[in-house]
Image 1 (tube, rainbow, N blue to C red):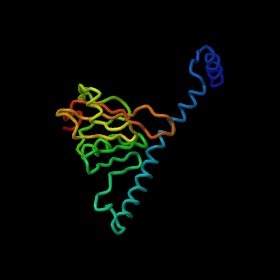
Image 2: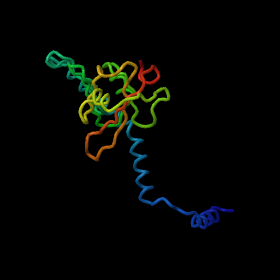
Image 3: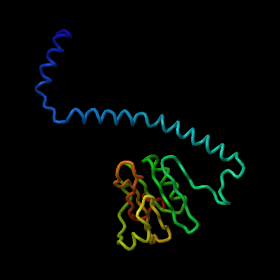
Image 4: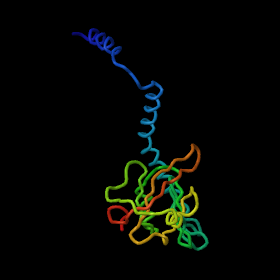
Length: 187
């Protein structure tokens, strides 16, 4: 069998294979996959630019502090600000670096697990919560998400994952309570 015969045979069989996925959906999926492959390079460039901006800000007079207070932890993807009253405000602009957001929240006294894509860790189990408890722990109707760590009952932690949001709007986080533990919330 030569190449021409093989090509002819494949063309003849192609017609007998049913295709249920629309061509537009296949093309769209290909674009999404290609865009995801470019993300690490773009993220690296953004991280370099952010590091340079932070270095310049630190060298300026008064850099690194604002009105005697440290600047909030801020990345291009999300921002965490701990206020003097103990509340922690989380704003997510891009679903990037969930582990970094989780570390920052834990450093600010919020036992948390954060998942942007995928499932919660197996060690995490739902905490029995009622609407009143949820309203005490999570203030307002974000975004941004306001967390009151002092309202968390003993043995409870926070679970964050993406919520539903309209295109162009800030990213909403679905927030819930889980049982705190080393494998789930780090404590």
